Image 1 (cartoon, rainbow, N blue to C red):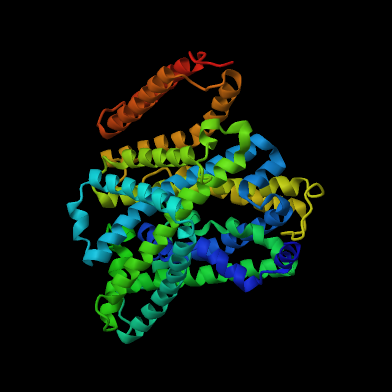
Image 2: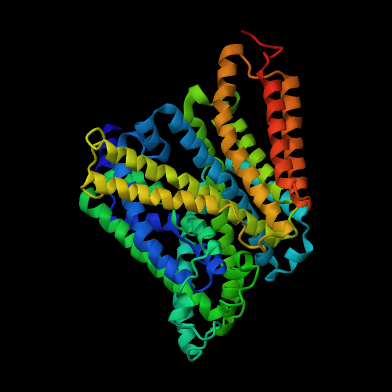
Length: 541
């Protein structure tokens, strides 16, 4: 066993391998599609700016943090815990996990969409499914995956290997075929009069409110941070890997966005491009190259395996990480309970419950496309918000560099490095706040206000619950149980009733609806606090 351990320690990761590992976590065809619908051809300029001024420094900061806290696993929460103590480390772990909830719901929704295309080859089923049935099917997906992971221990690795590998192949294939197709068509593009003026962004409020989606598309490289110390020459090899990552990301995003302009008119983008655009694209490519619907079906199954892998990882790995990483001090005992197979059963229930809550928020939207687009909008709020922790932690490390030595250092001058971290923190925080504005509906309409309200409600509940759990844990320590049965029932009624009432108010045209929602929410919170603060009737201490 000692020899085996020694052999494993000797293994190193080369910078090209690390680049490909990071690429899988950073960019995909859907990311290119989403931002193309938000900005059109000017997104090309946005990708260039992001790759130069955001992705590269962000990736290199992650490298230093991973190297600094290599003995603690290199996770985001361990970085914050190392600089600011246990509670902030716990809260970082919670927000990182909370960010996975809308992502998991979105991925489960995509599985339904993928299945529809894979079976029928058309989008007709989307017009026939009511939003309530769409939500129920998404819930069923979660239940199925919990059962699968319970009985098949290698399901996550199997799905990740197939889905991740096929996704990279299809993205590169798309870019290559698109340019061959442009030559084959004699330079014909769906986007008319393409020129330099076509890629110049209009830096208005709408543009800045879509930056969060760009960040959402390009973050995630912190997942490879633990491997920095496994490189033979981290000081030189890691920067190579991250620069190569930026170059490959630029290649896929810039050329990919231009390629989308070949097949879609950037001035008249289909409203369902985010949900169905990839299917339209591969169907057009297949017909252009004489393959019929083959590429469409191949993409459908690729996307299906990829999203299945995502749901598997988000349901299992993220839940396990949260429960095990936060320990006994802040996480209530009932959430840390595991079954005979070591699965955090109540943790799964919490994940599914919050996922169901997100689905309920979107159930009153007009159709599947609106639900799909809204979930993406919600991801572009929460995901960049969590990314802020990375820059905050980097600033704390560079503020006291002697206390936090590292094999790899990004920017030798501590003051300059701190200012770069501050700049990225401000940009990301502002993008997070502006991201609350709904993206795919007309501003000022009833639907726009409704989506704005449920954006705020979703974020407050997901993040706020993380602040409440340590208090629940303290009650367990003090009384033996957190609440009695009557308290759980009344608090559940107050919280669920408040959410339903807020959603209804958000869908009305009352002139004072924002003020009414705020007042109602405050009253509900006070009543919930009054119910929960008393000593449980069945207290054992």
